[in-house]
Length: 105
View 1 (tube, rainbow, N blue to C red):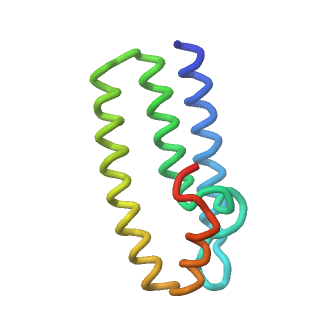
View 2 (tube, one colour):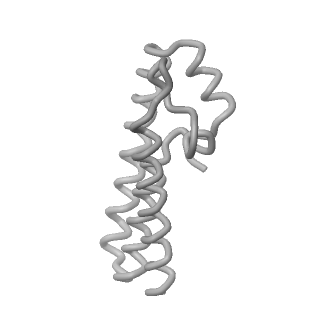
């Protein structure tokens, strides 16, 4: 379990770095649809979840697993609010993006 946790932690960290790099260079409209954002609308949240899940496997902590579940449920509600905001700000362009790109994986 320890090595699986290390692998997840490293994979999540790489995904997070890619997400941040792609986030730093939005299109002229202000939306990010390139790089990792072509695969998922929320790569940073996915990366955090993978990193935290790696930590759970490394520590084998039920308490930490419970915190990760609470984080993920909370993050989902935050994402829903962010998506409403993006739909209001970017309109039909964001709706098309939502229809062709998954929310998570």
